[in-house]
Image 1 (tube, rainbow over the protein chains, first blue to last red):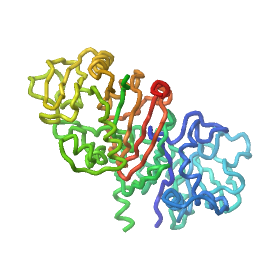
Image 2: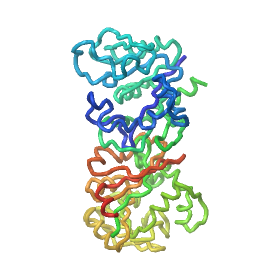
Image 3: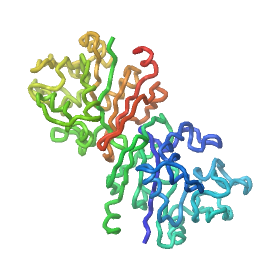
Image 4: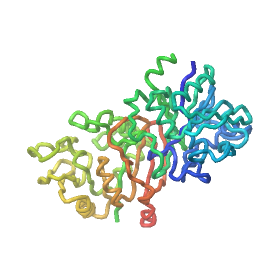
Length: 221
Length: 221
């Protein structure tokens, strides 16, 4: 059976997973692109877009692993786009163009359901208005034994962490300051939630950590 | 003229500069020793105690720099010891034995002044009950043109950062979770306070950052 994973999730040294002021021009908030400075140069990110460029190495190893054995994604509505409140129409189809990098069903948490959107390359956006448990049940079913990846943003990841539903999380801590924004760890005690650091690796661009629930390890071995 | 520096200040991935429950048995709080896992093996730390062992390399370079050109220290009372409230007597003289690693005057912030304590090796503890500005003025005078190092703990460093009095800060981010404790960045926007990351270096044990006030750079060049 697959596990529920967060992967390639960037946070700044001061603990923010996105900068302030997210909008159409700043999908990651102001300054938030620094969180991807380790990811965008990788071979994996190039290959997701059909390219053959990019760098290999430790950063790429972690990036690649984030896409391996993933059968479905869950993302929050703010990761899906800048539209807030009721959908004005059906035109917004994500930040990622006609062929998004997911290539699986993607379950979008939202208070405003809409009909599914079928994209190129195997990505279909499903809109779930009935909460994180329903979204996970739907994603597990769609993943059919593979992993479910919780994509983000921070609020979505925090909700699944607090509910004890994340088995493994890969954090990429980047040596930058964002000053303010979405604080991943705010009032959330990962040790009390049963997490421990299983693996670390540092590069010039990021310190990578695999954080795992103690109960997960036994389940996988 | 010397600058005001924080150096070798460890924080966990989840942003804590000490664990919870500081007391006589846990000077760094429960789990807080993880914050020093990069520091204790260094040659610098060995040399501070008169030894000749320890490792050289990037971690050691940062550790050594923390002691160079320091003419005075400022520390908070909780870094000085576990005693809270009025001093019951004069017996507590710090965590560090007869020959503390400072070898300079050390100004201890406290609401309960007491007479100075002269230790071996050049360390004298002065107790300052009149606030961070007075402590800094005294320390600058004692440093006589060399740097003033703000030692810690987190509350003391935050007070000096918020007041705009820290010129440079070396953070060592260790790949560990503490879960709770003293949160260095809580409700403090380092970008707004004028700080930027000037230098980074990653090792297996820590990601080192030099954070500097923009105004400092011009002053030093």
